[in-house]
Amino acid sequence: LRAIALGHGDHLSLHVVRIRDREAPHVHARHDLAVTLLDGEGELHLADRVAHMRPGDSAFVPAQVAHYFVNTGRGEAVAIVTFAPPLTAPDTVPARVE
Image 1 (cartoon, rainbow, N blue to C red):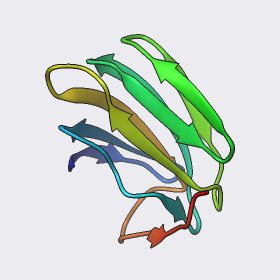
Image 2: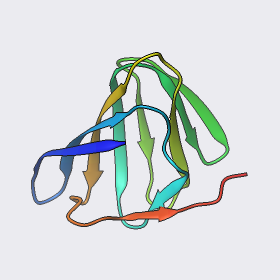
Image 3: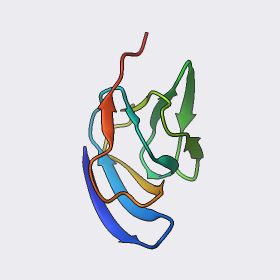
């Protein structure tokens, strides 16, 4: 997992996130996320649902909701992720997913 900040304003920040394999299940304590997959494919596990994502697909992840992404493609998955409010410090809290 690699995240690169592109910029931020008073109300949100924009990041490129690259995932080779998978994320560990987690929540964001204070941030809502909007995710748009640019390249690759995978599964976004969000609470008790699984969304199969391909380039152009988007998802909303509310704060405090357990989630993680699993790359199911051959190459790296790349997404644009918007955090609101702006992400200025780490906000990831490990979560248990059943």
